[in-house]
Image (cartoon, rainbow, N blue to C red; front, top):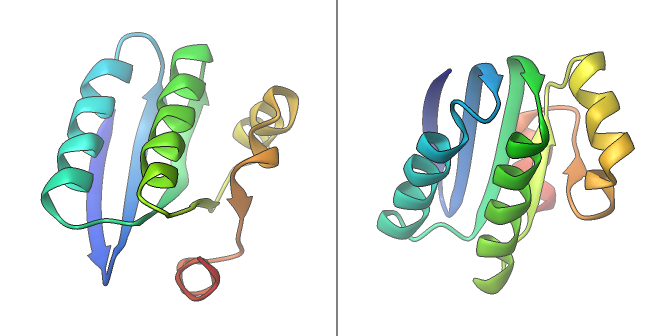
Length: 111
């Protein structure tokens, strides 16, 4: 799993590449939390264009980061999902708390 961060104003864009599963979840959780804490982040946007697999540990990472920014008065969004990951979001109910956007600009504008 590779991770890339981009910060625009108080929005953190987290681009994940690979698999977000029990092998990578803790490391990703720690890295994202560090970025949120160190960069005055309010909103988080997950860019999942290059993520090809997510298990329940990955769902936990997403929910945990949502809760973290929610406590800061922020929201979470997701962009660039493939069909497999979108199916996981639907089945797990993640779309009840995380908004899906067409692209990064729309997500920044609406969060």
